[in-house]
Amino acid sequence: MTILWSRSSRRSAAIASLALGTVTVIGPTPQASATEATNAGFETGSLTGWAPLGPTNATVTSTSPHSGSYAAALSRKSSSGGATLTDSPNEFTNVPVGNSCTASAWVKGPSGLKSTVRWVALNGTTSVKSVTKSVTFNGTWQQSPVVTLAMPAGASTADLQLSAPSFPLGQTWYVDDVAASCDDAPPPPPPPPAGLVGHWELNEPGAPAVAADSSGYGNDGADYNIQGDGEAYTFNGTDSRVIVPESNVLDPGGADFSFGVTLQMSQAPAIGETYDVLRKGLTTTTGGDYKLEIANVNGLALGRCIVKDAQKVAAITRAVTSLADGAAHDVTCSRVGNSVTISVDGVVKAKKTVTLLGTVSNAASLAIGAKAEDSPKTGFDWYLGKIHDAWVRVG
Image 1 (cartoon, rainbow, N blue to C red):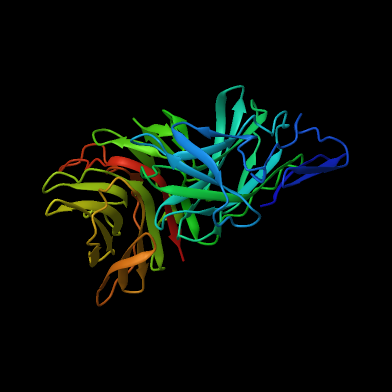
Image 2 (cartoon, helix red, strand yellow; image 1 turned 180 degrees about the vertical axis):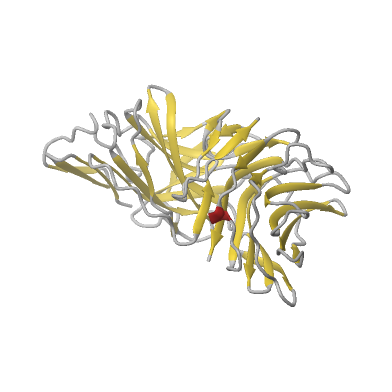
């Protein structure tokens, strides 16, 4: 395995290429850090330069690395939690405000579970900002998306964390060929991804007041009684929710659109009740509505997608696999033409087609984790569990 760590400034650049414990440095020592990465390739057969974070077992293995001779093997050693590896000591220190830091890795793990690459901007030991990208394991080696951190004011250290959150006890996942770098030049803001009109990564830690929208459309949500761990929001089932004010871009009209979440739950709603996971509008709302909810069907927590047009024509479809298993699941509702489908972890589970499904456009707020009303007549349908990510895509 070969891992490339680089840091550059406007005046100088340094590249450290580590393979089998050999370090070659070209150019002056970079200003972004006082040290070079140690054993970043795991190729010495040890974890020097890395450390497990939290209740994690971490070793190196020579069994089927992505490249080279070794990879890191991670598992959980507590009854709950994740399996996480971090650079230790932190390699990216004294990073100027505005620096762009990027990272990615090759990962392998049990199909359907997730791996994340995460930057945490630190002021001492205090987290100022974090950004995360995830990939769903498919049982083979795959490259994670690149995660980018713009160093915020009030922070100077970029901590790199490679994690499989909420990982099952007794399972192992692997990481290899990590690449990370920090640069002086702040990147221009990326254009909104095509069609993505709302994206709430829900990675603000503590008791956040705002769920930031990363789509570029500024659809930030107000948080109520939320607890965040930097990777997901926990909804307590009684008064936790996120309210996103009405925005025309969240109204698909007659266009195809989709919406969904990555959720994690262990308990189905009470018999006869539902959890509202993501919804815009109510069944009585003028202009139609759309929502993703969890229903209790014979004790199972089943995802259900509902799209209702301005004429009250509704397409309703429901998956048949319970989501209340403690694992993280991607759940997507998609409207294409006159059909609505529900997908779980990238697999279409059910589809409903009606004769004619018209426009969907209302003046309601979008809610995550409950209804958006102040005083609903039939209850708020509070969601109980975690949500790692939520989004709406039009077109």
